[in-house]
Image (cartoon, rainbow, N blue to C red; front, side, top):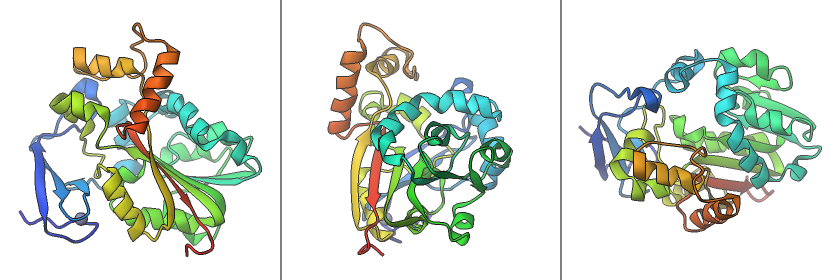
Amino acid sequence: MKIECKICSSSAIKIIRNQKIRKGSFKKRVFTDEPVALCECDVCGSIFLEKFCDVSFYEDGEYREQFNNSRDIDVNQLLHDEEVNDVVHRIGLHTLRGKTVADFGAGGGNFLDAVINFAEKTYAIEPAKHYHSYLAKNSDVFPLGEDFIRSGTKVDVATSLSVIEHLDDPVQHIRELLDSVVEGGTVYIKTPNYNDILSRFAGEDFFDYFIRISHSWYFNEQSMSYILKKANAKEFKISYFHKYNIGNLIGWLNEKKPKGNKNNIVFDDVFNAFYKKYIEQKGHGSHLWIEIKKSSKVQ
Ligand SMILES: [Zn+2]
């Protein structure tokens, strides 16, 4: 099997894992019939699946059905509302007052719902058509990034929260995000971190959960930096975002499964605030957090 890196075109690819991978909610333990190779490029550091799933998977609700056990918007919102707290805190709600905001991959509108009354106007870019009527209550809706770019609209802030890992072409996605903001505008990207603390401590048990057909890409700081430069992002900062309290790590060690933030044993909020910050500082957060400034010298 000849594999070429989709980022840098190198053929220096090694297979770092070749197992059946998750194709639905972890509770159901449904895996692919055949192993799917996880590949790593020696040149740019990109880590990706040997084959990607088709975009139609996201358009008709099949993706949510398989991974959330429901295509209903309220189920999706319940699953993601908690992390919006940390996202809004990281961006700073006060910075969005009077601004125009476009959320690429808006899902059930969790993030836009949180900022709607601060922002002057919001745009939801979301391929899942069954979410459009909800999103359209407060935002202008576009199915794909390219549709939004074609509209010629420019915003102050563009966000891409847990989206880029699903896409065929991450470089193109970052170009679209940069295209969508005004000069002086800001782009925020959040995506799972391959070097998550759990990949150290929970190993293969965690990889059965982490590696899934819907995530084509598994970024680290090296590959993300390469991709950002290739997309012509000049002024950017990559940091980390840790979504989980220590109870989640303990859950993985004891029970070999995700507990989210429900496993509140012994450690209180004060400890967890320290723990999350520490993990982020050490580069082992659950997610990479990227901020790109578009200045006049960028484009
Ligand atoms: Zn490469």
